[in-house]
Image (cartoon, rainbow over all chains, first blue to last red; front, side):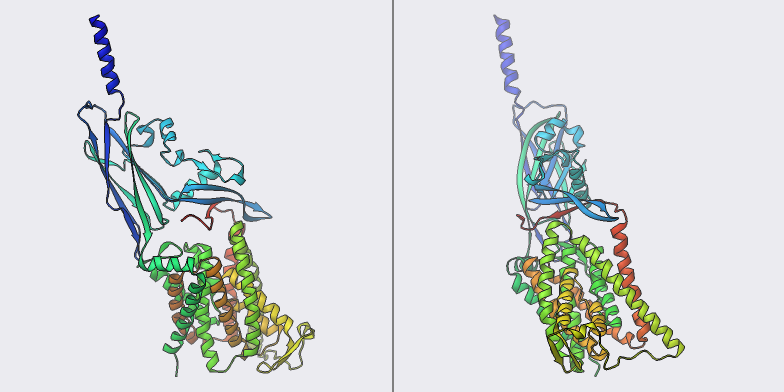
Length: 258
Length: 309
């Protein structure tokens, strides 16, 4: 009887502890808004956070792993492949990816393969290879797998432009429960809303996530010019022509040989 | 100094772009051409998206040709009636060109068509110009005078109906070839981001027999008008004119052109034409190599217009 009670209480204790949701993430960003002005050459956003444990959480020997991902606004991209036709290289086959993040940066405390299992990474779409790549309906297939040729090319080209980037060991721990990482934002980023997701792992298990947002927007003259060009194309065009004729006339006046 | 381009959406080194504008401006002043055919490839080569490069060069051509046109205007070396017909038909051609531009961009074949057009026209014009200038040089060395235009000389273009009198050019010719040339140059110009002066000038001289002293001023008016319309059309339909990029190019271009004109005055005409021909052929060859050479990267990305962002 006493042994049964002991077993039951032990089981209860185990059950009480087993949901590993006891850790909480507290995340702070160095900036919630990035302003693109005429001297913008890229910036860096520091993600700073603490892992908070409640009193009931037993201290564990293993270290925490933190993965920080920044996703840019979704875009539709056509990936084209060149083929030779009558001796000339021209775009032939293409695949249209819809709702693909225009920017994807991922910093982790260790390489992803050591942080967690491929199944978990795939389920939570962590890492460029684990993102879901929906394909436009005209192209037949619904999504492109990681070994798809067009998808590989897409990721490669995005990486070349610096718009898809990853840094293993990019997240550092100044204290055992405090982490920080600097996310590089290159100058050619598209504008829009960016989602910052922080994942907390231990022993390959996802313990907690946190999501926040940053806004990247053109400011002042850049914003004004962009808006004018896109909303008032006619006026913008006429202004450009007036500017051109004025510049030409001015040069004629300045350099006049009389 | 880095400056962020609002339409191209990337930062560029202002002095490099300024230098490009200046160098192309110098050559255009030296040879008396717009220089768009050099500037567009240079910009594409330096990482500016082709659509933005073509459209912004259009605005730059307006500035450089307007600047030169004003000089010719002061010297009264322009046939305004001929220029008027050319501009009017050029506007039609421009609209056509901008329409084709948008269509090709959607199909993903814009770069290909631009490259093929460059190879064809630069190769053709460069080749013709080179043979002509070499012949002139040989003639000059042997002491033979250059063949002059006889007043009664006619070709097939003079046998067409709808004849109109152009007093300033001392011509009485059909408007059909004039309109055809205007539409053709306008379409090509807005499609390729070039003024088309290097095609227009020979066409006016050899096809229509417009006197040489009138040709350049008249073609400058045609370029200013057509390219101005092309700039407006590119802004309204493709939104790809980058005002900041264009302004840097314009300032560099007009300054460079002034020095180019001064240097050009000390060089003989046939030698200038031979140099220009070689330059034109070199650019054409560059495009040809790109077309047939196996590219290092077979894939390319393009964002669809009308995106969420």
